[in-house]
Amino acid sequence: MILRRLSRFRDPFTLEAATSAVAYGEITDSDFVAGLAELVPKSRVTTQDHRGSRQYALLDTTRAYALEKLSESGERKWVAPRHADNIARICSSR
Image 1 (cartoon, rainbow, N blue to C red):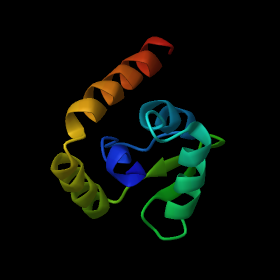
Image 2: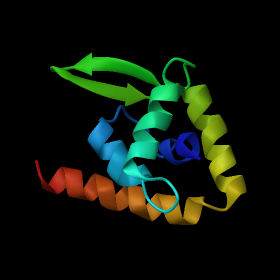
Image 3: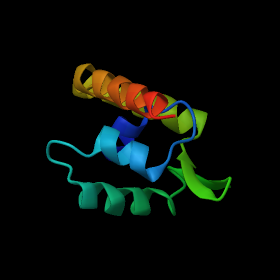
Image 4: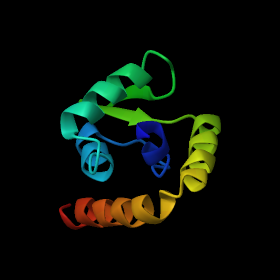
């Protein structure tokens, strides 16, 4: 479920941005952080340092697969607006 929800991020993202977009419903903030920590060593999510902060990203093939699974789950209609709101909030704070 975490990987499916992360598939909405096209570009690298911070832990804070992903938490606010992904951790809701049955996924708590701590569940999300633990789940993300499990995805990194499995190479489902990559990490990189950018200007002194850690960013995360999905490889294009992983993202495409996760987007497909997101659509199949029926959850896309809930995740897409939440992701868009999160991006708007981040952009307005800059």
